Amino acid sequence: MKRITVAIAALAAVSLAGCSNPFDARDAETTGPGQLEADATEAEVPAFGDIREDMFSAMLAADSVSINGEVEAGEADLDELFDGLDDDTTGSLSISGALDGSESEMSFSAGGSSFTQRAVDGQEYFRGEDFAALLVSELDDEVADLVEENFVEDTISDSWVLFEDSAGSVFSAEEFITTWQSELTGEDVDAMAAHAEERDGETVWVYTADGGESEFVVTTGDEPFLLEITDEDSHYEFTEWNASGPPEAPDNVITLDEIFEAIAEDQGWDSDALDNDENDDDGAEEPDA
Image 1 (cartoon, rainbow, N blue to C red):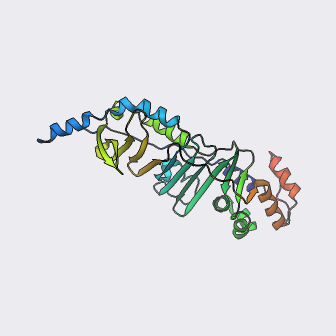
Image 2 (cartoon, one colour):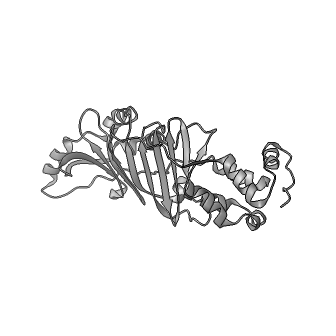
Image 3 (cartoon, rainbow, N blue to C red):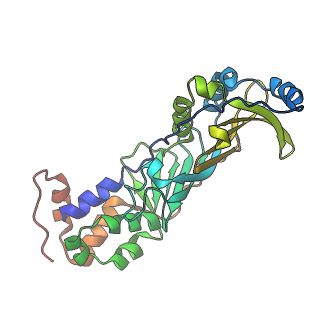
């Protein structure tokens, strides 16, 4: 039974790593007669290096934001979490709510696998349907022969799994932004090509690198905010700055202990043996079926 305990405990520490973002400034190009007009337009747009500090200060001082986009599983280390998910599989990432990860929700889905975490009132929850799939994928063959997949899904899928000993927060927009803050440094980044254009009826500053493959769209003004990031196979949109609402507390909740107890009851195991198994560092024998 210790293998089930270890499998569930391992899933209680789900997190996302930062993305890898190499940049090269686009070489200056000479053009025809329109060059003077283009130069005049670009002269109105500050260099990225001149707004970088103000932009990240404003973003990290925000109360909330929604971030939606696409990212390769390998860039976020999610190929290690999901069995059979290739590192080059592109999936959807969504973060909303409080910037610091409290009162917020984060989800990722790719290749038929998904998970959603939610933090509400200092408690962290994991969507049951996703947790059941992850738990089943972590069981070794011997344990999987004893515990039926359908039973695990029926027990957990309609609930949210409560992590009682967690910090009550999820992978946050703050962590995401801080990652990009550390990546977007250097002379090449500061000197990215820049121009202004109209998008959705608003004037924005657009910064590009890698021949246009990397693009950063920023609001204008004294407190600029990122609106979009495009970098190779990843794309993100930032919306609802200071207006992204918190998630609701789930109604149907199950704890890890209750999952253990349900499995023990189904197998005819002594639930006290499970408690001893969790606290026994040297391991314990499987409860008799």
